[in-house]
Image 1 (spheres, rainbow, N blue to C red):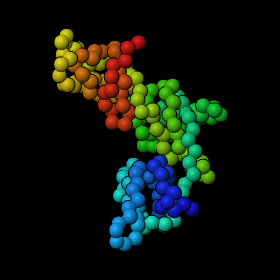
Image 2: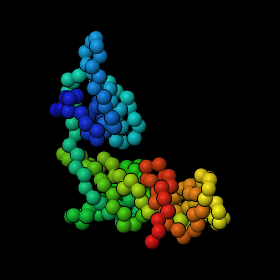
Image 3: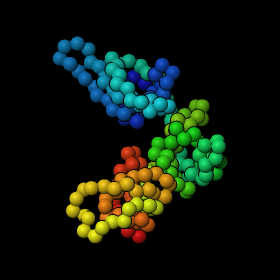
Image 4: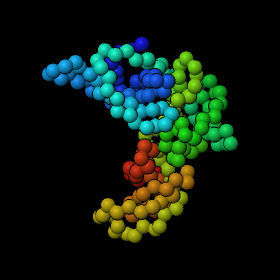
Length: 188
């Protein structure tokens, strides 16, 4: 059991049978009345963010989580198959539990969060940035670097992203996996 004084970002709690990650929290001590804690909680299974207020000192069930590295191998009808980089055991993870799955390619290493007591997989997180090759985009025109105009491009995983006009097919770009935005061009 933990209290509201133990809250920290990234902590996982059990609330009414559902698991939630604490995205952010704020201890509020008004001039009149009792103190309370205002939180933003992210549901592990649905990904929805919930605003919840707790009275100060309330006890909550903390869920112990282990973080392990898994390497992506292949996809089949069971889901995405990963290998534990330490024990070499293979497990399938459903698509809805992987954040940023559209940028996942063979050999990528993801961080899997596992419930310590039951061993169930909660989420799999891609690295924040990945480097991918552009497989198709309209050709760039020399001199198109002054504006912030973006054009559609397809990367090697099949996902479509928006890149600046000067990016051409065959170039490598760094992509933010959280929102799919272009970060920078990568030179070999």
